[in-house]
Length: 295
Image (tube, rainbow, N blue to C red; front, side, top):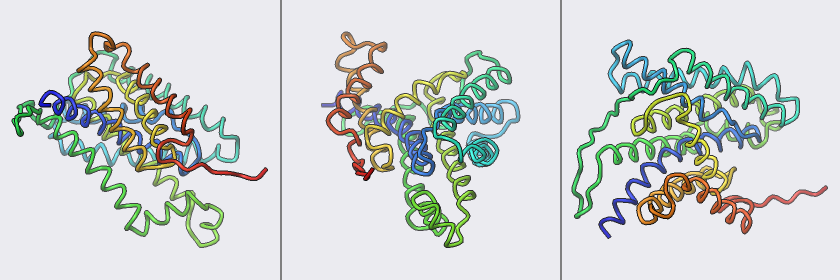
């Protein structure tokens, strides 16, 4: 059981990284009805900005962390205003293609500005082990879990208890009615893109502290996060978080108990196979609702 709980803690840490990015995907999908395939690369680019602030400008980690979040928010809102909003009257496919173009642009820019060489991104949490009830856990894993859960709680509280959050929910669900009530829908969507960009930055910075930093390090994380969002329900923020932790724990248990059979190469295919099986049984995801429309 000790070994089991150790794998669960590692899975929770990885699931927290997936959860923040999956929540960002759900925010964009609920607001616009499209999947932002550049969400992971936006987090990657923000992580490189944080790395530059720490290593080239001498900022402490948490100073660079919060400054990066501010830059990410402004950048996400600007992307919506400049790139996405002019395309909203077109088809959904046009917007999706634009996000794929953004993915390529951010990936190329990161390699051009900071080079494709692997970089070390310092962690704010020590690698010191802790003994909790006979279970040896890493302080870094606990820190990642704490930061991820704090972000999730703050986002839910923002949308549930603040006036701006309620306006954003209304603009996403009923944009036409919201305009009649005086809500600036375009501005609300830009704020939503900014918040999603901040969540992506958190996911990137937490992941980079466990991995090596390069322009492609968020691609696999984006895949797991997208799988988590679909597994929990692409329109369900709660479902995306639960799905992320399920995938994180599941992969950790697979790598621990079936390492010889699964290996690192089969972890992603197995996770996607399980996702496909769940969607065959419940296409809307575990927490999603099936919507029936009259034609």
